[in-house]
Length: 122
Image (tube, rainbow, N blue to C red; front, side):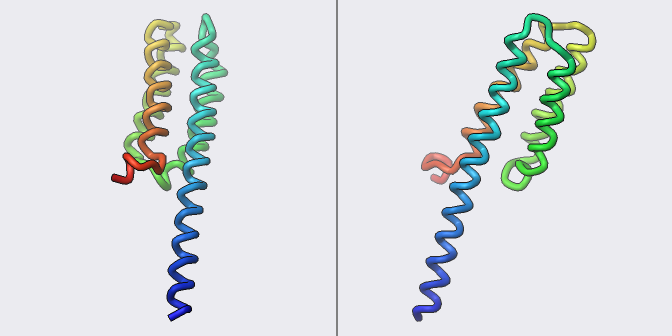
C-alpha cells in the first residue's frame, strides 16, 4: 500500500514540475519573442537581416514548442514571417508594419493560451 502511495505522490510531483517548467519556458520564449518584435517595430526602415535573424531564432524555438502547442498555430506565425520577409524585400513597409503587429499579437495570445492557469484548466 505504501509503495502505491509513494508512486502516486512521485508521479504528481513530476507532473507539477513539468507544468511549472513549461510555464517558465513559455514565459521566457514568448517574452523574448515580444521583445524582438518590439525592437523590429522600433526601426524606421526595417532591416531584413534583423528579421531573418529573428526568424532563425523562431524556427529553433518551434521545434521545442511543437511538443506542447498546436502545430497549426505555430505554422501561422512562421507563415506570417514569410509574408513579413516578402513585404520588406519589396520595401512595402506599411504591410510589414501590419505583419509585425500580427506577430506581436500572436506572441501575447499563444503564451496566454498555453500557460497552465485556472481558466485554461477549466
